[in-house]
Amino acid sequence: MTHLRRAALIASLIPLVAPWSGAAHAGAFVTLEWRGYAMAEHLSHGPAFAAGASLWEDHLRIGLAGTARPGPMNPHTFTFDVPSGDYKGQATLQLRSDGAVTGLLVSPGLDVADGRLHLELPMMIGYGGYGFYLHGEDRVTPDGRKPSAWENELLAEADSAFGVAANVGLRASWAGTALVRPTAGLHYQTVLGYEATMAPRYAGLALSLGVDVVLPGR
Image 1 (cartoon, rainbow, N blue to C red):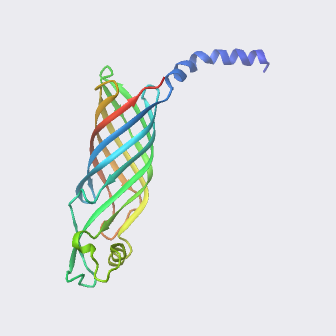
Image 2: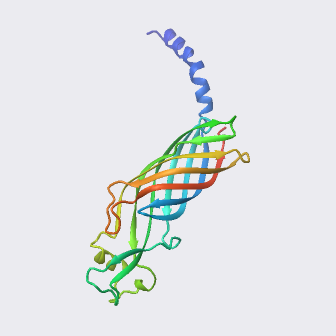
Image 3: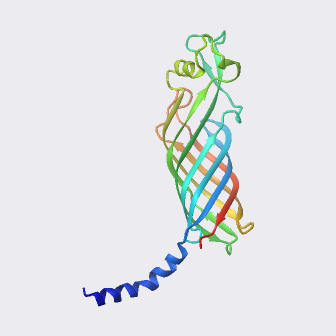
């Protein structure tokens, strides 16, 4: 192919590429949420975040995301029968749970209702896990060892589990101010291969409420 024909071919492609390249200027977004979970056969709640680049007029987001289930914020306890029959005079213990996952986010989206509503399909793949721990006075161990040492021993070294984490969902945001949008969503999260003494799996649905902060590209 001669240089002239190559130049002509490139010129013929410019009208096709130009609309996409112009719209692909990267903006930025930050999403802050609070989620209510139905995982490991109980209800819990915790924060979630996402941040990264917004492409094609916010029709594609790429970045980092994460969710957390803080133990101190969730009073639910899990009853554990002490194998030896006694821990500080107790045959059973009430354990709490905590954990988090983080990963890479890809989230395609589209505008509906004349742009007043933005729908997106956030998909995250990453790593994380959840564990169970002694709390309150039970953290003062009988022999002075660290609580984590007793947790490992009592729960047969399966007081927690970690693995590849996946999170998918459907989220809607409403046009608020030029930069800030209220959001609501439904999500499903799982840690693949999770298995701990207190829970054979840690997966389930979540409802989210939050805000999007979107900075358009130039």
